[in-house]
Image (tube, rainbow, N blue to C red):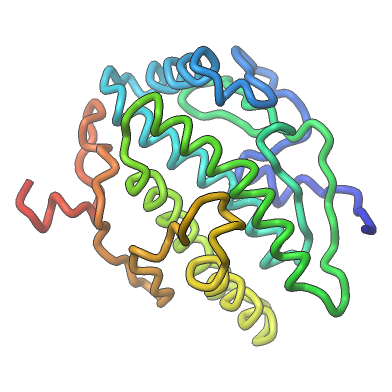
Length: 244
């Protein structure tokens, strides 16, 4: 496939996907180290210190919110720029500077433009790299080590995916762009086969994936953010409606 030189600006801000090591680097884990007990525990320790958190499960859950938000940069490339950034976990370095924030640095990045006439195959390749070869691997290991339920982790990811696709459809430069972005969102959240996620079912099927201006549905799960110092329940937390 044809490759492009990566223009990092739209991936760096606001997503934190960057080609160079950050100047304030204090810790980095690469390849599949996040899937080892030592690597993941160190990442969560640093992240938790940055949050001022001693609540291990809450730290782990909120970490996945940060991580999923950064991976939305790949979806931005696919749906808005029509450029495919391959981002499997084994080709990444997680770099911590001023915790709790961190960056994702691809080791050997490649940017594949959408081919004419076969966008469906190209889209599947991007999503499989993003989910089955990255996010799902991290979620599965994190759930195993911390006992945070997978439903919480996948809804954490959906919150950011739904938010950004709402912004991108609103800001689309043309009706054609808006249709493409909306179609990608519908495919990702409703139509994509489970194999692209590397698990046995479509992970977003249990949740409200409605995309509408200003619409923020109540979550089904609580991300436990309220357990962090000086934090409160999210505005869409189910604990609010339950009076928790």
